[in-house]
Image 1 (cartoon, rainbow, N blue to C red):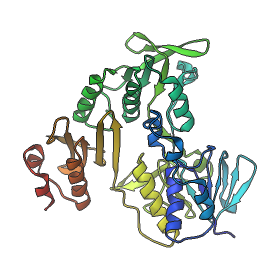
Image 2: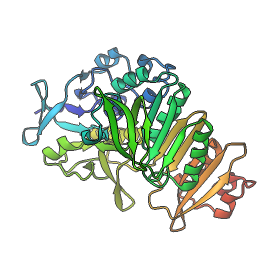
Image 3: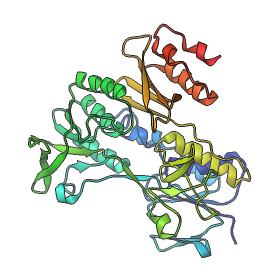
Image 4: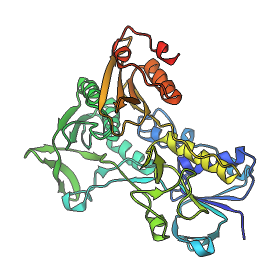
Length: 405
């Protein structure tokens, strides 16, 4: 028998879990398995500051190489788990080796949805944005004056549009839904973000899907759209959501449903196996959700570490998110799932707004656009269980602090 913790996945959640265990003075052996050849690193800056050349890759590393040796954390890179043998508590790796575990943590993350090959998704010049390799390839493509088509008007697509414009490209965004951000934000937020992008000369075409990508000598040169038009492109960025990496868990007989199902302690249907981060489906207000955010990956992983170290405190998600586009900072507190009413509040300065979400009369989330005060106030209200008066929220002259008393 071994007390070794094996962590499958070397992203944000996997690293946070190992680091927190060591911070808790739990010195059991830890092995992290990572498919990439790089040490664990931050992903959000990859497609922003790193892609813009404002940050070198070494600054994205969570810790330098010596940290792992200093803390008795073995890290195996450029390999991946092919099978979990639960009755033997063993992980079989792609490189032919195996690892025995006492506890196993699945922090396998998610994979961007790709376009089908049948509509040109396999052409050269078609990209998703997930890891360092993707960012390096995109950096080579993003040269001033080139034309990029971005498929998908969610946060991933809009952030890519902002970076491309910053680098001097001609940018077209297509969104097959009625509006951008339809799945993740209210119409008020979408309207504000659309105006910002159009002010930066991004062409946004809503209610417009992709029919087919046109190739020449194996490389994309144009896109046929659902409205019958064709546009010439130099390359394409696909931002149409992600798929949780739950196949390994499914093949091991764990319970999955668009992610690995866990309880309030982040345990899977096998009590010796945990899951955290983008791959995990967790309990939430009587239902289940999967949270795709750095904040959740860190918080849930650290909660798992505390449980492994002997604690018994359930993980209570307190969602918050952010998105940087141009000089605009969008901060989100709470989770707006199922909202049925919104209140728009103008900020104290030009370009500042906040959108407050309500469900059955209860405050559940806020989007703050260049309005840190609204974000902080809303976050505190959510944490304290305060249900603010909508009339006060809508009154730009009202001080939000009065609602915190």
